[in-house]
Length: 568
Image (cartoon, rainbow, N blue to C red; front, side, top):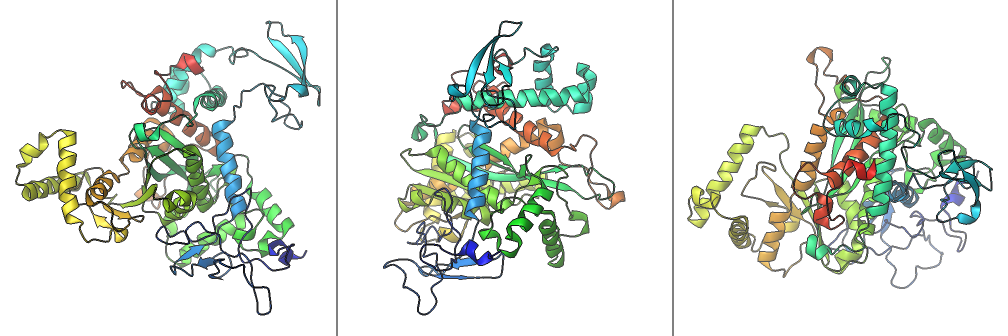
């Protein structure tokens, strides 16, 4: 096989140095929000001596680096940016989009081998014909392709114990482990797994029909978003390899309402690591860099093991922190998930007017992903990005001490007593803080970070890096932006998720077993983790936990609370 042909242009005969765009997506450009070259795709071809010159005005720069570590160096600002696989990002974006927008209960052919399998009756009526009714009076249809039939009716029409659905749902989202659900509801594990499948399909169908952000007035409901990730662990399925299975849970929350805009797991249940390995070998991808591959979205087993070995040599992980691939499904490359996640957020905003603020954990992979996804908004000064760093390992007593010290500092600067500050309304307190911060940031370069002096319990020792800061901006507006640059909304959701979904709780660490983590309530099947994660996200957004308004109501997607009878 001619591997060079995969990265060569067939139109002008030059070898490419940058990956092809895919479905209109290209993230390989300068991702520095302060650079004039942000969002402008550079010349993608190698141009050796004697070759045709680049088009006038095209950005050239340099592409260098070892295999799998290639980077583009911007000729304008001098920053470097790792090359990414556009095809892999587009594929992951489409997968995440389908999970949120495709109704799995829509009437269609149920034969997965039929060409009409993903063609619903509502949009492709020409592919089906009426075929009478069932004994219960439900209309029946026949697929014209494979001749198999299906009927349309109540979702629970084939269930013998549908009365158990609301009870099982409430226990699943309120921290009851599966073992105890079996004892309380009088069902088996097999029944629970079938109910999870049913509830998962129902909440996806509900969301596909109701979750439309096109009519949201972001300037009215708030235009700030917070993005962070948490690590979820599963039990190892075999005694032969007692190492952890870790999957990243990446979420973005709407700051004001708490609505979880997107929640994605670093796992694809439809994938297979052995199939990925075979596809890479068959296509010759093993001879290409990751950014040029046809199969660059999922980890292969051999490359994952090589990656773990590399981390060990670099002493970035030790023997007790080793982890392995899931034994079913496939692990998505985390950088691909980050870029696809950011593209999803950009698609949700669409063509809305106004200015947006994206706050994220101090992960430079997330920074690169969002800078590429909202480059057009940054160019128009319609988006700000803030990176947040704080001490996550601080004890509760130390957090209280930091919070108290911050209040004392504010009292000393304003001449007020701490007791007077505590009695201020939220609006008055915010105005007081903004005034003090505006005076303290004069002349500071906030792109390098600003240490927030008035500590909070949730984010002690917080440092904010406002990478889109521009000279000439009003100091008071900047002070307000720094105050609101917090991950509180998404971290609060993570806390609720760990508290109310039993398998997501932090593991118990055993000192007598080499600090390995195992829990009798943890999952063995990663596909169940995907479904339960989506079920709880739906519960948080639409059903709520007893407060007056749910996040969906605050965002304007619902007029009232959603009850179990509405989707079960």
